[in-house]
Image 1 (cartoon, rainbow, N blue to C red):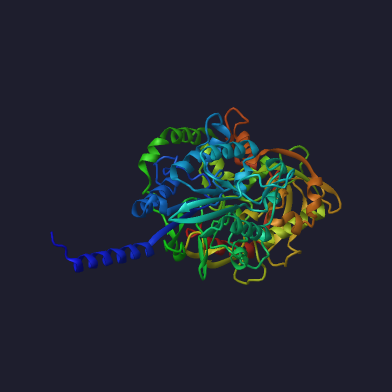
Image 2 (cartoon, one colour; image 1 turned 90 degrees about the horizontal axis):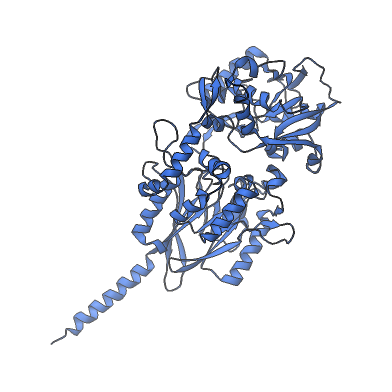
Length: 583
């Protein structure tokens, strides 16, 4: 048989060229989620079964990459806060506690390569997250929080980093949690742990991993907000890390729910946002000869909630139905509707209910609370358990703190200064027209976080919108008409988040040194959501009536003044914030 040597040589050269091109074009995909907040199921628990963002839609997207480029060429990471924020998370945290928790099973089904522990994961308490940690370990899914240290040993209580071999390269994933946990949560929830700031802790860990493991690519997976990069926010250190770390290739931020991509040369920061509505997708080109990783794409991908893994949902159908039955369980009746947005314009039934419940704590004269939902409505009529989450979203407990009358007034001055302005002639509410990183839309929104807009129950007072900070609050009396004195001390009910420093209202507002706050606490109660539930079921008929929750002799009264001016401008501001203009 004759062999065409020239043709053979051409085929051989072509095959070498093809191999070289395919090697140069080999891809490694990195997909990240964060702040899933219990977005386990793709279908609403309420009537209509509307599709909603979920982990099962994440799986559909990630599986499309795995199918296109191979499972070994895809890394899937989560940046924490999955254990709290939805009925399903609550149900498996505190109701269905005998069997395995659903979250580790879902992480395994989706094929997560590593997960970071978030602050709301710690908020569930040791019994919950210790159990989840054990299950994660048994499923060989690294649950990382290198800067969560055991107080007894100084060693990391969770995993510090993991090494992945994907795309033909060695990838190190370092996991770190938010260092502000001690400022937000009661110590009982994280007993035995302390938390280090990400700076300089992360750089030391990078140096150690680089020297010991010599990875081709290094990812810093953090439960920290993107921040401004100015070094002033311990809560949001993402851009601080991007601007200072040496040896990191990719930084994953989370916590603030703001979808973001920031590139600085070959180093990139991504933040996927929240509740599985979007993922961050990073694509690397891998050189198989040198293992060099070149960043070719970094993007935020909005997922279609209707495109979810149907087979996976079928496997978890029993769990979904259990959560749905729990969610739809009747609790009681409302004589009137409750609107959270009305709380921004003044005294509202929504906040009156919460204040009434909190003022029920023994010896309490004043309550501080803010609307935790931005735009929720609970309709008049039958109330189901799902409405408890609409009224009170988080697992905050109720704490009672001793404060002076002056501290109470200063606290309110600080709270309303985040809420209103006297410097803008066109507005009373402190709002701005900007591009919302969470929604992607250009719209009006509050400058500051509305969950820090505390009003007071148990007092009669006014807020003068024409006066500067420090001169707006005029406390007239207690709700029962008794005198209020700046020099006297009183028992004040507030959330555990607030008592632990959330929003800085106690420290910067009331002027109480952080080291002193714990000594002011005189009582702890159960979760505020549970207290609200108990308020609904306290009577046989389970009816919550307007005259009960709005009793001025109990909850007090407050208003913005001058009334004509304040009402007119706030109404205009509310129309900007909410397109329908309704309270």
